[in-house]
Length: 388
Image 1 (tube, one colour):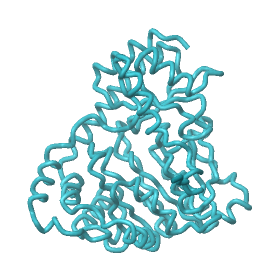
Image 2 (cartoon, one colour):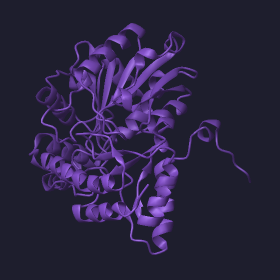
Image 3 (spheres, helix red, strand yellow):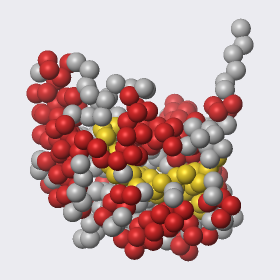
């Protein structure tokens, strides 16, 4: 028998990271020593006190049953306290917070609650591919907002035509940004909220990297802006902050109706987050934050080591104080895929071609700082031997 994929599945571009894994494994099988700086998966283990909390909770049979759909009250209340402590934002845990099986799941499902077929979603590019795929799964039409160096890799949302805005339902923003490492301040968020109110559009903020920083100034939350709770929802993840990518735990917080809609979608799709993992999340958010600060300092050290090799190779680095990514501009005329292929085959270094994040990423590549300093020194040495 012959089976055909649906139109929505055929409309998706190949998932970049899956394609990259195949090529990397092929090169490694030929005997090349691979330094993988591709996928943003932290290499250090989850802090011990979080693991201990999971072990204790997993042994309690109370946690062996179905969890609640929106999250344990104890976890939701912990998120509320985190927002108050970290951002000075007051939330109602029962109405304005929802647990997620990692923020990716929430980002993908959110459009299903608010986007009808044909509605427009404003998607930043280069950007996380799930903003686009979630829109397509909901039958929406992505309208791409270029993130350009001249604008600090922030979208010029005010330049969107009235015709598009009349059909737009959601705008996605992501700061600190993947893949560029760019940041946004409260002035940017304030203008965005006022613009969103004018057009009655939902602002969906992906804040997965808000705690990955070595700046003395903390990164703000969109929800700090007065009036943001009228139009906004923010997606958070414990994955990158606490080295918990495999644990699958995050949350959405914001406008009550937006949280309710996401919760209704999720209650028909999944059965919530394993309660023992939520208990571990409580330990992460309320426990010692020294491991988070230490990782920030380590990423800065790693960046400085890698930067030496990039600069020696004549490559330009976008200045950043956040995320664990290095966004590199290539010499004029050099294609992202060609550079990444040459780097993998000649130097054994895996990076992500910038155009995999969207057309405006052409001419760039992304390095992820997910190897220890000695391996990054080796990567820097290999880079320095290549001239572009």
